Image 1 (tube, rainbow, N blue to C red):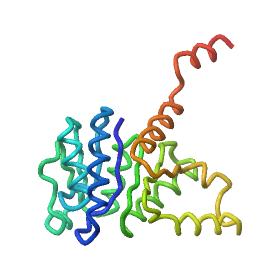
Image 2 (cartoon, rainbow, N blue to C red):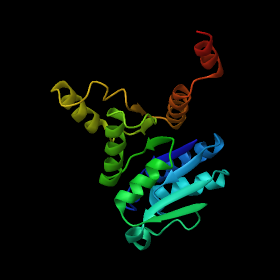
Image 3 (cartoon, helix red, strand yellow):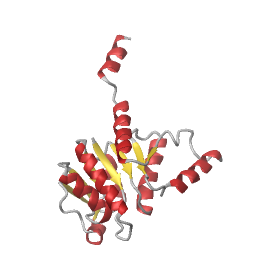
Length: 195
């Protein structure tokens, strides 16, 4: 499975965040997946990619030309895609991914989260979306959307389109379960044919 991980590139954050990204990269590789990420070699982006490669996973980095110098592109990526701008970057990451995992991050990570969440809520894709939030960074966001939902501003399936967790293991189990659920098993196909 190609898993897109949205996460921070800031170098001003507590070391626990890059450490979490490293755990994610290690687990992604252990489970035999491919990483799609933002293509920077710094902070959490660099940590997840290095850990994934160290575990034998293939990594695909996607970064706009304007950020290649600013964010120090991950030249170690198995495939580094340089786009013309941020919009193209998100489109490439979306197209190359089977599922999305969101770690703590800044407004860029929020933008990516909202775009994938919105498009799934609208039925434009059925790719799993999981937020891994061990320290409750996104708790105010959840409360905000819950309030919007209560006020009638969201679609009824807004929370069906996203999963929240606090552990790396559960995050991957949710991603894999959701992806498996989207693809009928041999038994389900047999039952459908027999019926």
